[in-house]
Image (cartoon, rainbow, N blue to C red; front, top):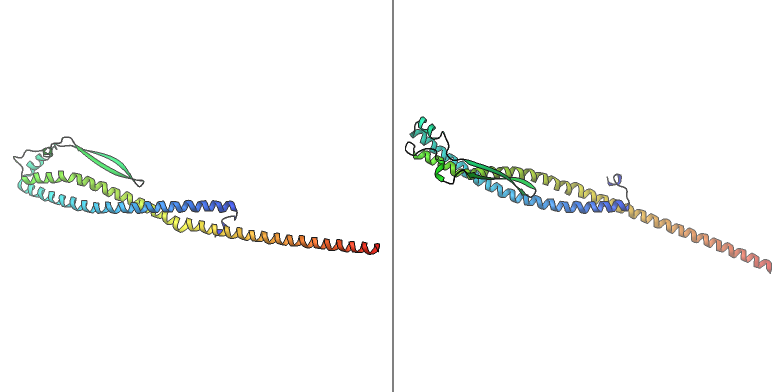
Length: 231
């Protein structure tokens, strides 16, 4: 209860009002942050769904081509063709701040810009199905990296959204009502003390007036006695 937690003084009242103003402003900012995080999170979820469907379809097509290539080519020729990759890929990672959440950013570069460098074999002894499988996987690389980036971003943003939601609920249902209750209690106590002080002052004033009246009556009586003796 508020009555057991605070001392009803004007200094404490000012402190609680300042605390309430800070909590209210923080609640608004956190609520806006939560709403914006949710908006961006939902956008990423939709993008994640689209990318996952595209990547899974591409991987399925590449696997199909690999199966066809394996059926049309001997294992020795297939293993030799894929033994030494010709192209190299360099992955660079960075971070981007989105509403105080550090999300990853992936960028990749290839050793050469020639698109034919993805084929580490000659075309004389291999089937076109193998070419299609390698080309499908090469084309999927940007989408796979973006998918990994988006999925990790969704995980990090989900954690931050949960933290922000808890803070908003703590402010809305605990701190703000508690400060309001304390302010109400202190205000009530101060009003009671002020009324009690006014009543005491009024009583003291009445006592002083009564004392002055009694002294005046006594003085008048003494004056009357002196006048009678003089007569």
